[in-house]
Length: 334
Image 1 (cartoon, rainbow, N blue to C red):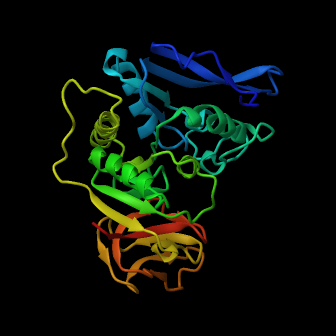
Image 2: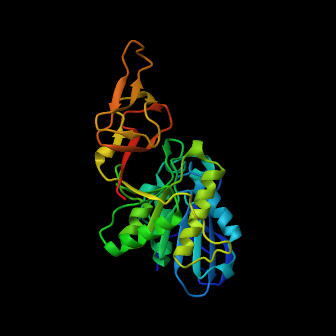
């Protein structure tokens, strides 16, 4: 039994479709007794595997919330074998504020796992997910995009896990999505990720990078929705009346597993990109430069790739601080 102070009135073992909330006790300047209501949907029919689906882990990434809200209304219990649990706005305060971090405590939800009951509100939500929801899951999907800061080629993501059977199952589900890329990545900005925690428990887990703020539109949302339905069908949880989405081209399996694949700006200034998404690059090739607006006579600082491959992601916001990631180099491995 969880020692979390968060709770839900939904019965996750009841057949049918239920709309409700995870309630997180909190206190504000205008309400000493208050609850944060985080939307929760459960669709169940009989015994079978459970899929646990998240959107809004980062509040400025709306592909997940829109996809899961549409999915929750569309799917009927008679299409389901087992159970689908949907959390369309995990970091609800950030989703409502259009911010990556929670405005309540300044925390990054995707660096808060597994959390604890005595943590700040973000860590308390992470603890509820870790102790109550993830143990129910046979498959975990956490939908992300590049948000406001990064442009990303659409991909389904995972770490390289040690268990070959778990890795094989994750790859099978990822390829079923039908995204242009299946992306194997490493953590370069700290631990505490929701997908990493689920993976550590042996759960087949998928993340995504379904584009970014400037790519948000019908094509990206269609790929996100249809691909997620494909994964649920591949996992034996969802029956698709119209059949599976078939992409024009099969997914390419790519990886950015070297720290040097993640190019951080050595200085603050205005970032000028010299490469586009998908461009091939060689080690030592200029991929961008930093302009110093306070010193117009200074030559821009050239930023170079340290590894060979192609650009799977690059910075979208010109104003850049020292240490910000400005590009990611990936290599095709299959």
